[in-house]
Image (cartoon, rainbow, N blue to C red; front, side, top):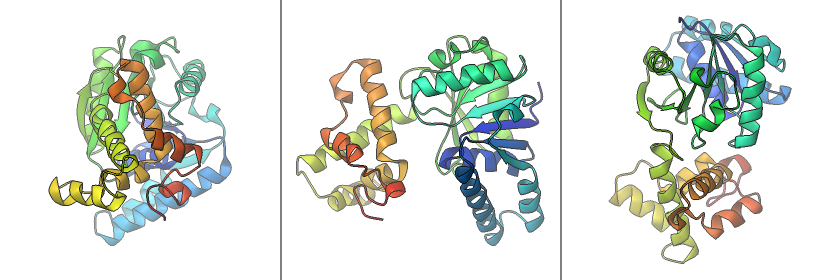
Amino acid sequence: MKITTVGVVGAGTMGSGIAQTFAQHGFEVCLVDMAEPLLDRARVAIATSLDKFVAKGKVTSAERDAALGRLVTTTAIERLAGADLVVEAIVEDVGAKCALLAQLDSLVRREALLASNTSSISITTLGAATSRPDRVLGMHFMNPVPLMPLVELVRGQATAADVMRIGSELCVALGKTPVEAADFPGFIANRILMPMINEAIYAVMEGVGTVEAIDTVMTLGMNHPMGPLTLADFIGLDVCLAIMQVLHEGFGDSKYRPCPLLHRKVAAGQLGRKSGQGFYTY
Protein backbone atom coordinates (compact mmCIF):
# COMPACT_ATOMS: atom_id res chain seq x y z
CA MET A 1 0.00 0.00 0.00
CA LYS A 2 1.34 3.41 -0.95
CA ILE A 3 0.65 6.20 1.52
CA THR A 4 0.16 9.60 -0.14
CA THR A 5 -2.65 11.27 1.83
CA VAL A 6 -2.42 11.66 5.59
CA GLY A 7 -4.95 12.87 8.13
CA VAL A 8 -3.94 14.18 11.56
CA VAL A 9 -6.53 14.65 14.30
CA GLY A 10 -5.59 17.09 17.05
CA ALA A 11 -3.97 20.47 16.34
CA GLY A 12 -1.97 20.78 19.54
CA THR A 13 1.82 20.83 19.72
CA MET A 14 2.23 17.20 18.68
CA GLY A 15 -0.49 17.16 16.04
CA SER A 16 0.75 20.31 14.34
CA GLY A 17 4.33 19.00 14.41
CA ILE A 18 3.25 15.69 12.88
CA ALA A 19 1.25 17.49 10.19
CA GLN A 20 4.21 19.75 9.37
CA THR A 21 6.60 16.82 9.11
CA PHE A 22 4.40 14.87 6.71
CA ALA A 23 3.74 18.00 4.60
CA GLN A 24 7.47 18.79 4.45
CA HIS A 25 8.16 15.34 3.06
CA GLY A 26 5.71 15.42 0.18
CA PHE A 27 2.50 14.05 1.71
CA GLU A 28 -0.89 15.69 1.27
CA VAL A 29 -2.02 16.46 4.82
CA CYS A 30 -5.40 17.30 6.34
CA LEU A 31 -5.19 18.54 9.95
CA VAL A 32 -8.46 18.27 11.87
CA ASP A 33 -9.51 19.80 15.17
CA MET A 34 -12.87 20.70 16.68
CA ALA A 35 -11.65 24.20 17.61
CA GLU A 36 -10.99 26.67 14.79
CA PRO A 37 -8.70 28.84 16.99
CA LEU A 38 -6.45 25.80 17.56
CA LEU A 39 -6.23 25.26 13.81
CA ASP A 40 -5.36 28.94 13.28
CA ARG A 41 -2.65 28.70 15.94
CA ALA A 42 -1.33 25.49 14.38
CA ARG A 43 -0.98 27.10 10.94
CA VAL A 44 0.94 30.01 12.47
CA ALA A 45 3.20 27.61 14.42
CA ILE A 46 3.88 25.50 11.33
CA ALA A 47 4.65 28.55 9.17
CA THR A 48 6.96 29.92 11.89
CA SER A 49 8.75 26.60 12.19
CA LEU A 50 9.25 26.37 8.44
CA ASP A 51 10.55 29.96 8.36
CA LYS A 52 13.19 28.95 10.91
CA PHE A 53 14.22 26.05 8.68
CA VAL A 54 14.57 28.49 5.76
CA ALA A 55 16.63 30.89 7.89
CA LYS A 56 18.97 28.05 8.83
CA GLY A 57 19.28 26.89 5.23
CA LYS A 58 17.64 23.52 5.88
CA VAL A 59 14.83 24.11 3.38
CA THR A 60 14.37 26.60 0.57
CA SER A 61 11.62 29.20 0.38
CA ALA A 62 10.07 27.19 -2.44
CA GLU A 63 10.09 24.02 -0.34
CA ARG A 64 8.48 25.90 2.54
CA ASP A 65 5.73 27.23 0.28
CA ALA A 66 5.19 23.77 -1.23
CA ALA A 67 4.85 22.22 2.23
CA LEU A 68 2.28 24.82 3.27
CA GLY A 69 0.45 24.21 0.00
CA ARG A 70 0.13 20.50 0.84
CA LEU A 71 -1.50 21.27 4.21
CA VAL A 72 -5.19 21.94 4.73
CA THR A 73 -6.94 22.48 8.06
CA THR A 74 -10.57 21.83 8.86
CA THR A 75 -13.07 21.20 11.64
CA ALA A 76 -14.86 18.63 9.45
CA ILE A 77 -13.55 15.17 10.30
CA GLU A 78 -15.46 13.83 7.27
CA ARG A 79 -12.68 15.32 5.12
CA LEU A 80 -10.52 12.35 6.20
CA ALA A 81 -12.65 9.77 4.40
CA GLY A 82 -10.16 9.38 1.56
CA ALA A 83 -6.98 9.34 3.69
CA ASP A 84 -4.50 6.46 3.39
CA LEU A 85 -3.33 6.99 6.98
CA VAL A 86 -4.86 8.86 9.91
CA VAL A 87 -2.76 9.70 12.96
CA GLU A 88 -4.63 10.64 16.12
CA ALA A 89 -2.81 13.11 18.38
CA ILE A 90 -5.48 14.09 20.89
CA VAL A 91 -5.45 14.17 24.69
CA GLU A 92 -3.75 11.24 26.47
CA ASP A 93 -7.01 9.67 27.61
CA VAL A 94 -7.96 6.11 26.70
CA GLY A 95 -11.70 6.81 26.50
CA ALA A 96 -11.28 9.80 24.21
CA LYS A 97 -8.85 7.96 21.96
CA CYS A 98 -11.03 4.85 21.69
CA ALA A 99 -14.07 6.96 20.81
CA LEU A 100 -12.13 8.83 18.11
CA LEU A 101 -10.65 5.66 16.62
CA ALA A 102 -14.11 4.05 16.50
CA GLN A 103 -15.38 7.12 14.64
CA LEU A 104 -12.44 7.05 12.22
CA ASP A 105 -12.94 3.32 11.68
CA SER A 106 -16.47 3.97 10.40
CA LEU A 107 -15.27 6.83 8.22
CA VAL A 108 -12.10 5.82 6.36
CA ARG A 109 -11.59 3.06 3.79
CA ARG A 110 -11.06 -0.48 5.06
CA GLU A 111 -7.49 -0.64 3.78
CA ALA A 112 -6.47 2.66 5.41
CA LEU A 113 -4.17 2.61 8.43
CA LEU A 114 -5.03 4.13 11.81
CA ALA A 115 -2.14 5.23 14.01
CA SER A 116 -2.01 6.63 17.51
CA ASN A 117 0.60 9.06 18.76
CA THR A 118 -0.09 7.89 22.32
CA SER A 119 2.92 8.02 24.59
CA SER A 120 1.77 5.28 26.97
CA ILE A 121 -1.67 3.77 26.25
CA SER A 122 -2.04 0.19 25.00
CA ILE A 123 -2.27 -0.09 21.21
CA THR A 124 -4.08 -3.41 21.70
CA THR A 125 -6.79 -1.58 23.67
CA LEU A 126 -7.03 1.19 21.08
CA GLY A 127 -7.14 -1.26 18.19
CA ALA A 128 -9.94 -3.20 19.86
CA ALA A 129 -12.13 -0.08 19.61
CA THR A 130 -12.13 -0.58 15.83
CA SER A 131 -13.16 -3.32 13.40
CA ARG A 132 -9.61 -3.34 11.98
CA PRO A 133 -7.16 -3.96 14.86
CA ASP A 134 -4.78 -5.46 12.31
CA ARG A 135 -4.53 -2.00 10.67
CA VAL A 136 -3.87 -0.08 13.92
CA LEU A 137 -0.36 0.75 15.16
CA GLY A 138 1.38 3.13 17.49
CA MET A 139 3.52 5.91 16.01
CA HIS A 140 4.90 7.78 19.00
CA PHE A 141 6.67 10.88 17.68
CA MET A 142 8.97 12.89 19.95
CA ASN A 143 8.56 16.58 20.74
CA PRO A 144 9.40 18.80 18.87
CA VAL A 145 8.38 16.53 16.01
CA PRO A 146 10.09 18.40 13.13
CA LEU A 147 13.46 18.18 14.94
CA MET A 148 13.49 14.91 16.89
CA PRO A 149 14.66 11.92 14.81
CA LEU A 150 13.01 9.09 16.77
CA VAL A 151 9.62 7.44 16.30
CA GLU A 152 8.56 4.60 18.59
CA LEU A 153 6.59 2.10 16.54
CA VAL A 154 4.27 -0.01 18.68
CA ARG A 155 2.76 -3.30 17.57
CA GLY A 156 -0.60 -4.17 19.15
CA GLN A 157 -1.62 -7.77 19.73
CA ALA A 158 -3.41 -7.87 16.36
CA THR A 159 -1.27 -5.45 14.32
CA ALA A 160 -0.30 -7.07 11.02
CA ALA A 161 3.36 -7.48 10.10
CA ASP A 162 2.90 -5.59 6.82
CA VAL A 163 1.39 -2.65 8.73
CA MET A 164 4.50 -2.45 10.92
CA ARG A 165 6.63 -2.61 7.77
CA ILE A 166 4.67 0.25 6.19
CA GLY A 167 5.00 2.24 9.41
CA SER A 168 8.76 1.72 9.43
CA GLU A 169 9.07 2.74 5.77
CA LEU A 170 7.01 5.86 6.47
CA CYS A 171 9.34 6.87 9.29
CA VAL A 172 12.34 6.53 7.00
CA ALA A 173 10.54 8.62 4.34
CA LEU A 174 10.09 11.31 7.01
CA GLY A 175 13.79 11.26 7.84
CA LYS A 176 13.09 9.55 11.15
CA THR A 177 14.58 6.48 12.82
CA PRO A 178 11.91 3.92 13.73
CA VAL A 179 12.40 1.78 16.84
CA GLU A 180 9.87 -0.96 17.56
CA ALA A 181 8.55 -1.27 21.10
CA ALA A 182 6.33 -3.97 22.58
CA ASP A 183 2.85 -3.02 23.77
CA PHE A 184 3.61 -2.52 27.47
CA PRO A 185 2.54 0.58 29.44
CA GLY A 186 4.79 3.52 28.52
CA PHE A 187 6.52 1.48 25.78
CA ILE A 188 10.30 2.13 25.96
CA ALA A 189 10.71 5.90 26.13
CA ASN A 190 8.27 6.79 28.87
CA ARG A 191 8.76 3.64 30.90
CA ILE A 192 12.31 4.90 31.46
CA LEU A 193 11.88 8.68 31.25
CA MET A 194 8.77 9.28 33.37
CA PRO A 195 9.91 7.43 36.51
CA MET A 196 13.09 9.56 36.38
CA ILE A 197 11.02 12.74 36.16
CA ASN A 198 8.71 11.47 38.91
CA GLU A 199 11.70 10.73 41.15
CA ALA A 200 13.07 14.23 40.52
CA ILE A 201 9.71 15.63 41.69
CA TYR A 202 9.89 13.46 44.82
CA ALA A 203 13.38 14.90 45.44
CA VAL A 204 11.93 18.43 45.28
CA MET A 205 9.03 17.53 47.56
CA GLU A 206 11.34 15.91 50.13
CA GLY A 207 13.79 18.84 50.09
CA VAL A 208 16.70 16.82 48.72
CA GLY A 209 17.59 19.80 46.53
CA THR A 210 16.09 22.86 44.91
CA VAL A 211 14.57 22.66 41.45
CA GLU A 212 17.65 24.38 40.05
CA ALA A 213 20.05 22.09 41.95
CA ILE A 214 18.35 18.92 40.71
CA ASP A 215 18.35 20.09 37.10
CA THR A 216 22.00 21.21 37.35
CA VAL A 217 23.10 17.82 38.71
CA MET A 218 21.44 16.07 35.79
CA THR A 219 22.75 18.44 33.10
CA LEU A 220 26.31 18.91 34.36
CA GLY A 221 26.74 15.59 36.13
CA MET A 222 24.86 13.26 33.80
CA ASN A 223 25.27 15.25 30.56
CA HIS A 224 21.51 15.43 29.93
CA PRO A 225 20.60 18.22 27.47
CA MET A 226 18.06 19.59 29.97
CA GLY A 227 17.17 18.79 33.54
CA PRO A 228 14.20 16.53 34.35
CA LEU A 229 12.14 19.34 35.87
CA THR A 230 12.74 21.65 32.90
CA LEU A 231 11.76 18.74 30.66
CA ALA A 232 8.63 18.05 32.72
CA ASP A 233 7.56 21.68 32.26
CA PHE A 234 8.24 21.37 28.53
CA ILE A 235 6.20 18.15 28.19
CA GLY A 236 3.39 19.42 30.43
CA LEU A 237 2.88 18.28 34.01
CA ASP A 238 -0.63 17.07 33.19
CA VAL A 239 0.82 14.82 30.49
CA CYS A 240 3.49 13.55 32.91
CA LEU A 241 0.80 12.74 35.46
CA ALA A 242 -1.37 10.95 32.89
CA ILE A 243 1.56 8.77 31.80
CA MET A 244 2.56 7.95 35.38
CA GLN A 245 -1.04 6.93 36.08
CA VAL A 246 -0.99 4.60 33.07
CA LEU A 247 2.27 3.05 34.33
CA HIS A 248 0.96 2.74 37.90
CA GLU A 249 -2.34 1.18 36.84
CA GLY A 250 -0.79 -0.97 34.11
CA PHE A 251 1.94 -2.54 36.22
CA GLY A 252 0.33 -2.30 39.66
CA ASP A 253 3.74 -1.51 41.13
CA SER A 254 4.16 1.19 43.79
CA LYS A 255 7.42 2.35 42.19
CA TYR A 256 5.27 4.02 39.53
CA ARG A 257 3.08 5.91 42.03
CA PRO A 258 2.80 9.54 40.84
CA CYS A 259 4.38 11.97 43.27
CA PRO A 260 1.83 13.88 45.42
CA LEU A 261 3.54 17.14 44.43
CA LEU A 262 2.86 16.32 40.77
CA HIS A 263 -0.81 15.79 41.61
CA ARG A 264 -0.91 19.14 43.45
CA LYS A 265 0.76 21.05 40.63
CA VAL A 266 -1.73 19.72 38.09
CA ALA A 267 -4.69 20.37 40.39
CA ALA A 268 -3.49 23.97 40.78
CA GLY A 269 -3.28 24.42 37.01
CA GLN A 270 0.52 24.73 37.12
CA LEU A 271 1.15 22.66 34.02
CA GLY A 272 4.51 24.03 32.87
CA ARG A 273 5.31 26.17 29.86
CA LYS A 274 1.82 26.04 28.41
CA SER A 275 0.26 27.56 31.54
CA GLY A 276 3.14 29.94 32.34
CA GLN A 277 3.95 28.22 35.63
CA GLY A 278 5.26 24.77 36.52
CA PHE A 279 8.49 24.14 38.36
CA TYR A 280 9.68 27.35 36.71
CA THR A 281 7.89 30.56 35.76
CA TYR A 282 7.57 31.41 32.05
